[in-house]
Length: 218
Image (cartoon, rainbow, N blue to C red; front, side):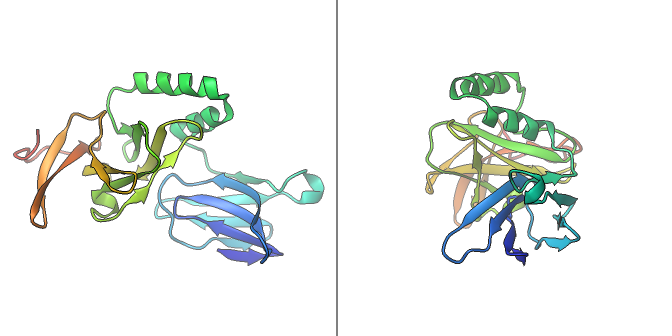
């Protein structure tokens, strides 16, 4: 987070930029935009009317529009969104009735889960009743719980990550802060010893993963 001209520029670890008024009495958000699909850990910077942000694999430049020339402070990312993020944006703009239909259509069109969009981008997806859902996976830390995004007014949860093209990942979901569940859309499972217990995980591989040892896979 940085302060610029009476405003706060906040880059969350989920890759979203928030622009808010620097008011100690209350939080007043002026604009927000999703710029990265992967995790971001660095601070943003500001130079000559532009916000610069980066994560491990991408850099984004965002123009700030003067309020005198626009009814709102707007942010425009100069980075193309993935097809999945474009779909999420369109669903969030739809009516509640249309939203359910669009999600039904999306789910029926997928052959495998998680959804791999390119050789290094994967979308973890869960659809079901839950107050809270988190991802527990190899690449995020097997002991860590990473909150998943939810399309408002739906039971559709998702989390997008950038992985190595040859990665093979085991994962599971943490429902409502305590229940460990496997991916109901993915039949591939593995059992591994974690400390003193044998636990179950779902698993998948990226496009360039080469099968070397499948002894423990089922």
